[in-house]
Length: 236
Ligand code: SF4
Image (cartoon, rainbow, N blue to C red; front, side, top):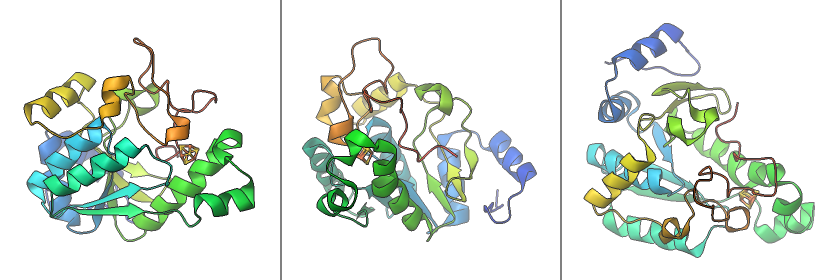
């Protein structure tokens, strides 16, 4: 399928046709690189889904562009994992995207530990604005969203109109389960964040991520003291 869908020339019929005709995750990835070429980037958090999607993207495009939103507040295990991934896939273009302000500059302007007072503003400054800036150079971006991750993600499609960033958002893994992700990681001996073995199914910044009790929602440890379960990247 040659059709290139862009946010500026949105065509709902074409979107429906693509979502009906693209058969599986590999089909989606191949189509996306075919039509967007170097105008597509993967915004990766290096969680379990992220590792799987990196491996799949690298099979189709060994020079794939990956961006990590480096808030400077991640776990040391996450930074170590990124180094391991860089060694395993030396041709991938992995960019550590920094916010405009350092943590100290942010504290000077907004007060110390903004994540404890206003995590929505903190995520806006350290994640959303940097991604917006990065996406200004492309037409589309990949995300590792899965439908069974949360009710808010249950209607995600392969090809989505992203009205947050005014781009096309491509989600090849929507039909994968958590077990599928881990089976793939183990079968392919992929590197992963050791915090996953310590009851951290979903891993973000260190100050905003706690381990979860067994049976809890996988995102229960994110912003556990707030009525917030998403950093805002996937909310319109
Ligand atoms: S996850 Fe927490 S520390 Fe990280 S950007 Fe959001 S509020 Fe700030």
